[in-house]
Image (cartoon, rainbow, N blue to C red; front, side, top):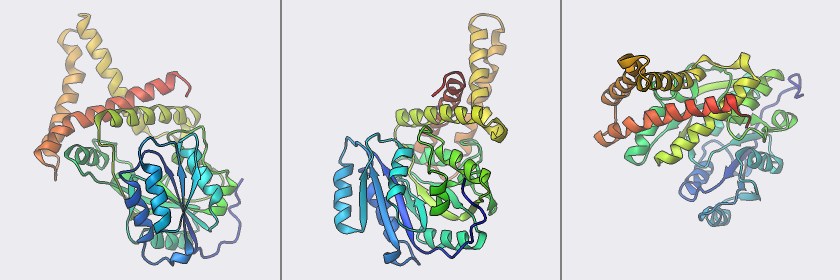
Length: 331
């Protein structure tokens, strides 16, 4: 168990760790955002990429980045995110470990501000807001859904909130000694490993601190099938976490599976002639909600609003179906 009584000191040196798999499109911008951080001496920075078995040119991009920046790579044969994180953490030498996603770009003052918050609060982990952004019309619709209470339900690291202790945060800036004492990420948790680790941090007496000033730009999935798979997998692993830690589960986790059950039961009862047109009520109400969300979504083009008609059901129903699958079958 990590010690919460260890005397704290000001933290200055930083290791950025990043698991990478099939990210040729985004990897360079993610790495460049690290070396564009303000208020951190370059001599206090190291970057460790855990390279999975990519099928695109990701590893070639990584090799080129090594010739441009102070970047180290380690192989991650499984390609799994928690395994890659642990391999990179094992190579990290500095006092603070910053988790970076290859689909993300750190704001310029992200690290210096995170160090300040770590030193002020004595927290074991600090994090902030996932600021989803899109490049295509479809991706912009997904980004809107990420930051909407209709889309992902309003978690603080999606929609913001007040600074203070939190159950979990996006990515994370960790005290390395605390993180390593806990054994890093649980490699059985293919999804939801952040939440599980933050639970162990809190159980060990550490503080997980949210601050909305810490912003990370995140580029969501750009294809419908990949979005569906991502949300089905996430829902399934969230169900596993919920079963293991039911007292820590948030009630909003149950909204998508409840929606799936209501629509499924309504449609079955309609087609079997049990409830007649009443069986269509859950589906009709949900369709109206999606239509209303699309019509009132601010800042979106017509193409993105039309894409939202597919994005919202894909996110909700994939997550809900995955959650129900995770409840019934062990991952």
